[in-house]
Every structure is written in structure tokens, then in C-alpha cells.
View 1: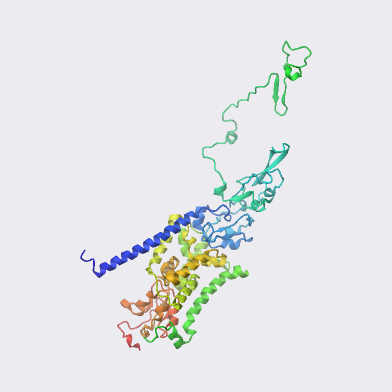
View 2: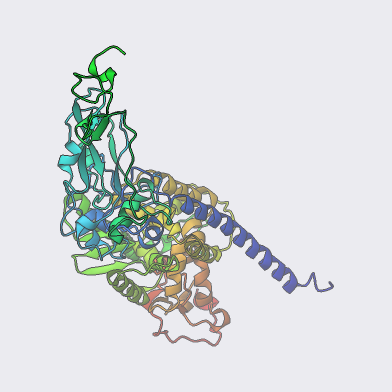
Length: 287
Length: 299
């Protein structure tokens, strides 16, 4: 204790105090920045990354925010995020409703990336997964309303694969067909052309980042019909034929519907003159 | 002291050497800073693509890749290994700054320096005296912090708020609200702390100072015996603590500034009426009388 007031002790205490001050101040700042960075890892729904972008957690580590992809995009669709935008500052994105990806065959944006944040192993633009189109609003989609809009289907660069039109009965009119646009995630690249072209005031089909748009079945789920095909036959063998309980004297054939069954020999006791074994109710007679 | 107390630093040098010679390195440096910025800007402004990208990575004439080693270090800590092109750029930049001096980046390239130098100029003009005190080594804590958050968050987290890349990227790709961050840096330097950002806090500068520990180009003091203690070099130097040991031969320091935080701005060469300073290399230490030459006799 007696050396507490010597110059070296005072200097040491000053040094420790200064060090603690710097460490605490900088540590607080670091905590703030770190939390902010974690917060920004969830990509906002309208922002779509360029083709070949790594999953968001890897992307925010690999992208050095140089803007080379922005420069080499021949259609100028890409932007670098500004500080006020809700994603990592300086990272590239596009907004499909403004300008969708034109899916260049040589993928210049990926080639321009110096770090591989846009994965250089992507050689076929049709294999890119920028996002996934989702028909978000069944109430406003014109095809759902029974019209033949079909625009999303027509503009799709992977036509007839990424979006198909599946016929369904129009229950409202009872006699027309609805051509329902169905997106197939296996083929959809997330280019956003459908969203850009959708004629409703607010797009009824939108592209979202994959993590938002794609569901996943539980790993223990098995699809019976798939398993049946794999196995080359029913797994709950043998298939039991369905038994129908028909009205008396009636039979059912698919397509024809109900029709009177004609048994080989008419049972005794049927009224003379009757041409069939139909119950009375079906012969127009009073019961 | 020969200079009047209110005389601006460098007045003596202007009188002795003429205005141009007393501003030579300052003019060259501003030309370099603005010229580099213009090289990046003629692309988006006029469609003349000499340089693409920004200070984090740039590609000159589709031939020369230049990568900021600091941002790649953060990327590596966030567990991502870049492609060869970026790594080549890192090597070139490391070699370049090993030659010209690590913190030459700060004084000859970085756009924020224009901003903070302006803040300092205004601070002197307005006669603002007070300055908050935190140690200059704080920048190394900042550097450490940025590396720790890269490791902890698995992302280049510092780039979200880094005023240096925000300014350069903003000028080229669109500023957005980055102007507010830059205004904050400017006001901080003007009213809160003298040489606050570049001299105390900036982790980018701290990183480049580490390269500067080994770099070739240095300020030497071939005529330190001619020093008349006018203090002009201390007044203009953004890191005045680097001058004293070499100028005053403290602890037998040779007349060569080997301190990592010297930014090689050359302003001390400009403002010295006695031509004490000159650019040199770390190896060509000028031979001077080390054995207690009486310096006060110079007048």
C-alpha cells in the first residue's frame, strides 16, 4: 500500500483506467454494430439478390460491397443498399416490380464478383435460385377470377415449366374453366418477370427470397403414391376393391353413373308386364 | 520564438520558399485524393470506364485488381474465402502500401480525409480550442472490435457502418442517408475532438498503420539540427506525436520517422522554413551528429 502514491503506481493506475475506458467504450459500440448486423441478416421481402448469391448468412460474410456486379449488369437492374435500407449496407439487390432480372446467358454479374459471394459455379442461368415466385393473392389474380390473363405464364423465361396453367372447374359459373397459374419451385429462377408483368394494381404474383417463399415437409413424411411408384406396386398389398352400397337393383359404372342392373333371371313375384326388375318407385307407379 | 502567436502555421515557410513550394505536397496530395475519386466517377458520370468498383475492390481497365486487405481479413474471419481475383488484388495492395507507406492510404487516397481535414481547417479558423480526450490507441481497440464482430456475427458487420467505405461507395453508387453519417464525422471532428476520427478512432487507418510498420517510404529529417522550434510542423501534422522522437533525438532516435501512424502526407515538409524534412526511405538514414550537437545555437 505504501507504494500507491509513487509516480509509477499512479501511471499504472492511469494506464489501467484509460485502457478500461477505451475497451468499454469500443465494446459498447461493437455490441451495437454486432446487433445491428445480426438484425440485417433477414433479407427484406422485396429485395432479391443477384443470381448465384450464396445463402444470406454466407453472403453477408463473402460480399465486400464493391458493386462490380452492379457495374457489369447490362440492364442496370442492381442497386447497392443504402444505409437507410433494411439490409446490409452496400450489398447488391434488385426489386422485381421495378426491373426484373433479364437472365443473361453469360451471367456477367456472377463473373464480375471478385469474392464468390455470387457463386462462380453457377453456369446455367436457368439453374439460378434468386427467389421464388408466389401467387400471393387468389382474390385479385385475374385467372383466379376466371379471366384468361395468363400474362405471368406467357412472360416466364422458363415457360411451361416454372409456371403452368392448371385447369379447374369454375364453381361460380358451373360451366367454365379456371386456368390457375401454378409455380413449380424446381424450375422457377426467381427472376421476377411475372411480378413485373402482373397487370393488377399491386402484383398478385410476387417473388420472395427463398427462405420466405418455400415450405418444407417434415423429414419423416412419405408420399404414398411416390412410394408406390418407387416400389412398383402398392405397399399395403393387396389393394382392396372398394365396395359400393347401391340402391336395390342398381349398378354403378364410372362415366355412366347409376343404371338399372339386369339380373340374369328375374326374381319370382315381379309383377307381370313389368319389363325390368326396377323397384316400383323407379317405374313411375305409385307406391 | 520568432513567429507571432497568431501567425498561421507555414507563414514563415511561405516567406522563405514562396507559396507554391510551401504547398507542394498539399497540392499533390489533394490532386491524388480528388484524382482517384474522379477516376472512379468518370465511369458512372460520363460512361468512361477506367476503374470499376470502389475502394473495397476495384478493377482498372479490366486488368488490374485492387482489393482492400482489411475487408478481406474481415471476410476471412467471417469464414468465407474469396476468389483468386480478390486475393490477387490483396497482394498488389499490400505490396503497394509496403512501398509507399501504410497510412499513405489515409492521406493520399481516402475520401474521408478531405472531410476531416476540412473540419480541422475550420476548427483552426474558428479558433475552437477544446477537445475531448481519448487516447490515440483507441483506434486499435476499434480495429480489434471490428474483427471480433466479424468473427462473432459471421458477417462483415463493420461495413454496415464504416464511414470510409460509406463515403466512397456513396459518392459513386448513390449516397442515401450516408450523408448523415459523414456529417456526424465532420461535426465530431469540428466540435468534439481535434483529429477525432482519422487520428483516434478509424479502424481502417489503424489497419493500414500495421502495414506502415514495415513500409519503405518514410519522412526523414536530414536537417534536424536546423530546427528553430517554430512548431509549425506540430501544428499541421495530423499525428504530431510521431514527429517528436525523430526531431528531438529522444532516446537516440535517428532522424527518420519510423512511427507507423505517420501518414506520409508531407505537410511538415511544406511548412518547414528550414527544410528539416524530406521524403526518403527507411534505410537511407541521413548521417547526422548524434552526440549532443547544440541545437539551440542555430539562431
